[in-house]
Picture 1 (spheres, each protein chain N blue to C red):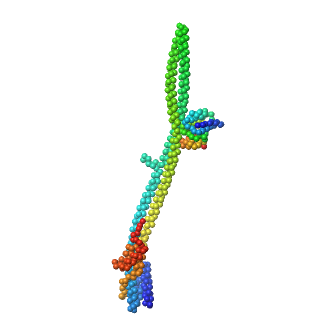
Picture 2 (tube, chains in turn red, brown; picture 1 turned 135 degrees about the vertical axis):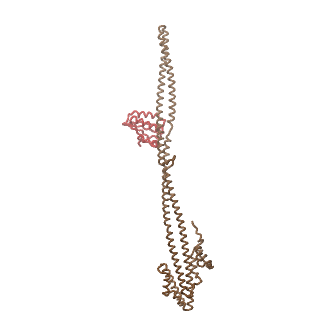
Picture 3 (cartoon, rainbow over the protein chains, first blue to last red; picture 1 turned 180 degrees about the vertical axis):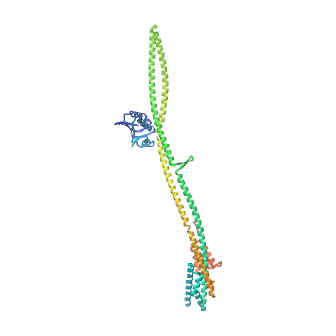
Length: 101
Length: 410
C-alpha cells in the first residue's frame, strides 16, 4: 500500500494506492493515529487509486470509520472502483458510512 | 303417325296428372280420392284409356302402355319404399355416430378441464416449495438466503476488524513487555551497583577494625538485601519472559488468522445472487408458460362445449329425415291407390311383367355404395336379379368407387 496525506481547511484527506491487505496493518495504524488526533472536522479516504483490498483491509477501513466516529469526525470513503467498489457494495458499507463516487 | 302423336299426348297427360297428384299430396291439401275423382270427372287419364280402346290396334297399344305405366308405378313404389328404409338407416347411422362423437367430445372436455386444473396447480406449485412440512414461497427463500449471506459477510468484516484490533492490542502489549524487560534490566543494573557498593563497604569496615564493626554489619545487611533484590529481579525477568513469549506466540497466531483473506467468500454472495436471479427469471418464465397453457386448455374446453352444442344439429336432421320418410310414404301410398283405381276402372288393364330396365339401371349405376345397391336390386327383383344387370352394374359402379364399402377412417 502507498499512502499520501493532505489537509485542507478542516479536511484530513488520506489517499491510498495499490492494494490494502493485512500486511499494511502497521502503516495503516499510523494513519489511524492521524485520524484519532481530532485536528479536523472531516476525514476522507480517497480510494481512487486503490485497486485491490482483502477482508483485513475492509476491517481496517471499518476501524478507521469507528476511530473517526469516536472523535466526532465526519468520515467518507471516496471514489472506490473495480474490485474495491464491488466488495464495498456486497459488504453493504454504504449502509454504515458515507461513500461518494 | 297419328297413333304415335296420340300416344305421346296421352303420356304427357298422365305425367302431368302424376306430378299434380304428388304435389297436391305433398301439400296435403287434397285427399287422394278427391284427386282421382277429380281427374276422372274431368275425363283425363281414364277417359284417354277408354277412348284408346275404341280401335283394336290403338286399344292394344294403350293397354300395353298402361301396363308399362303400372309396372313403372310398382317399381317406383318399391324404390320409394327402399329410399324410406335408407333414410331410416342414414338417420340411425347419423344418430349413433353423433351420439358416440358427442360422448367422446364430452370426455375430451372433461380431460381438458382436468388438464387445465392440473396446469393451474402446477403453476401455483412453481412458486413454492415444501420444506419440513411447510409451504414456503420461493421469493421468501431467496430473501432468507440473501439475509443469511449478508449476515455472514457482516460477521466476516467484523471478524477481520476485531482481528486487526487484537493485533494492534498485542503490538501494544509486546511493546509494554519490552519496556518492562528494560526496567528489570535497569533494576538488575542498580542492584549490581548496590551489591558492589555493599562489598566495598564491608572491605572498608574490615580495614577500620573495631570501629568499623557496626558499619560492617550494615554493609552485610545491604549486601543481603541486594542479593534478595537480585533474586527477585531474576524471577521477574523469568516471568516477564514467559509473558513476552506468550504474547509473541499469540501475536503471531492472531496475525495468521487476520491474514486469511475472506474477500473471495464475500464475492460468493454476488454469484449466489446472480444464480438466484436466474432461478427467479426461469421460474417466472415457467409460470407464464403454464398460465398460458392453462388458458389454452380452458379455451379448448370452451370450444369442445361449443362443438357438443353444435352437434345437436342431429336432432333437426333426424326430424327432417322423418318428414322425408313420411312424404315418401304418402307418395308410395298415392301410387298404390292410383294403381288400384286404374285396375278397377280399366277392363283388361294389368301391370306389365317386363320392367323398363333402362331407367332402373341408370338409377342403380348412380348408387356408389355396393351394400345400398344390393338392397335396391333385391327390393325390386327379389332373389331373381337379372344376370345382365349383375354383370353390368357393379362393373360400371366400381369405376367410381373402388372399395367403396371399406371406408378407411383416420
